[in-house]
Image 1 (cartoon, rainbow, N blue to C red):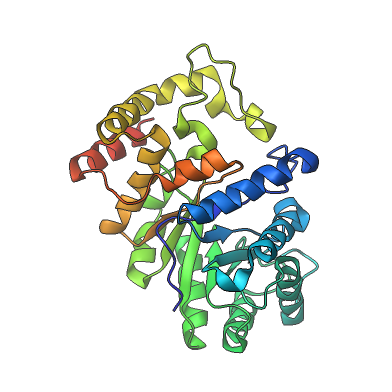
Image 2: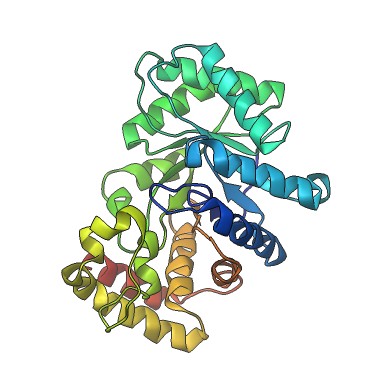
Length: 313
């Protein structure tokens, strides 16, 4: 069974110019530095997907891996399959894996996930049986899912178990501000089945960094976040008490609000299913910031206080 570290890097922004305003000429070197700095800081797990930048994220990672000499590095790559309408059989799944491996310039990936629980013309049973076969051939080391409900996760787990393969992860939105999985059964079911939670958007797309708060700053979100009501003055005012608490706790540990927010997620592994945050990093400084969430822990009292305040933010 593949084991994953306590934190990874989400690479949605690498190559995506729709949501994240990626500019190839200017940003390729920045994300390359983010990749290298992550490795230097001890973060070796990277999550991508075939749809991120229409394959550009995978291509960038493939190039970076070749530059460093992938065989000499303990790097784990996760990617995802999107069950689009024209993909209706097992061969389509296998072809998609081949395409991702080619873009990544790898023979195998540590984790292969189904991006959405949408079946269209292909059943969940066929999906899971095919992925289980790919584990046995060695092209993928572990199978995961993403955005699956509790019942859908249980179904996927059942099909994989029948094939002698364990469901490794469910990748879902989870942060101090996004807590649905605590009440809709996903977190409880993951704990019951031994499934790891990969927490995407663990900083609520930057809200928990504090850089967008109502303080006269001219910093504004880019891309589609411009129309997100949470980034409007009313939304920012609502989360201000939480940001203040993150700052107060951060002062105690000499850490940033973002590092406290990530550490809170890591802390949840103590009482729930394992939770691994996968924050984004478009620059070297963001990569170092993410790594600063490792190697220490908030207290039980701080965990509870942050959790309670986050629910009302």
